[in-house]
Length: 259
Image (cartoon, rainbow, N blue to C red; front, top):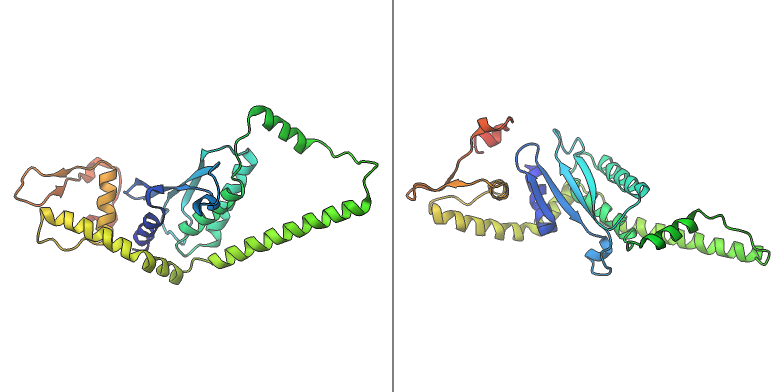
């Protein structure tokens, strides 16, 4: 399914920063987000966040449930509200297509712009006082100098805004075709992992067919969730023991019949 393909792509892109939370419906996972500048190796990490995602029924036509937590650094209440609003608006803009990578990339860009070291208490109080203190007019100030300073700041703002717009245009909207391009890009890595998993599986069952991407995903998720495999009889292939009655859930048809 598209969701399984999206999860496989995210795992290939984020590697150890991708963690499965629940492998049973509703599927959920987390992504550790670093500043975009730090990902490129250009900056130190002062702020990092964790994106928590839970797929909702009807995704991607409906947005997933999401939350953000601060892993490193410190954000003001207003900053946290701002980045969460950015997360939700990005999801709304990308309904109908795989959107998690786009959301994560926009958030990493925001974190990069706010990647500031934590100030000690005294420095933070001084900074807050400077922010709230009224600016007193000086009798020595020249109106022409003020106008030049205003124009210079305006030019810098326009330049930074245009640079951000160009970068987002280069990233582009994640269409279905673009997502398939990403899948093709990471397919060699996925095939390599699939071959490794298949070889391990064939130790128990030499006649087994190669594992599908869905089977590999579910097997990895089950191992992370602490499932154990029944190996009481060494003459038979290992079989996972799963008692559906122990869980208050309704499994989808494709999981119940093993398709």
